Length: 86
Image 1 (cartoon, rainbow, N blue to C red):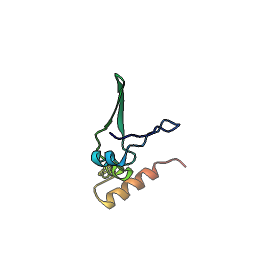
Image 2 (spheres, one colour; image 1 turned 30 degrees about the horizontal axis):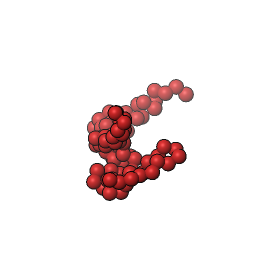
Image 3 (tube, rainbow, N blue to C red; image 1 turned 120 degrees about the vertical axis):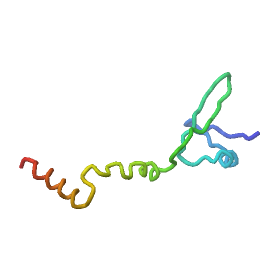
Image 4 (tube, one colour; image 1 turned 90 degrees about the vertical axis):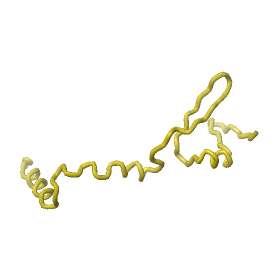
């Protein structure tokens, strides 16, 4: 049995031994439940763990929107700019 201390703002530090067993990292989400006098903490399934990883999911999202080659992209940008009112 491991004992932890609740802090004044309701924060609880999960002991390192348990964090290692669960492979939990900073800023990962956990689901907290209370039922029949028992608190459970369950890690939420994760796909990405860092902001950088989440950002990578957008890589290539705009591919082909402006053209398939650098020349086509430049032509699309010039056409769009020429349509602006000045």
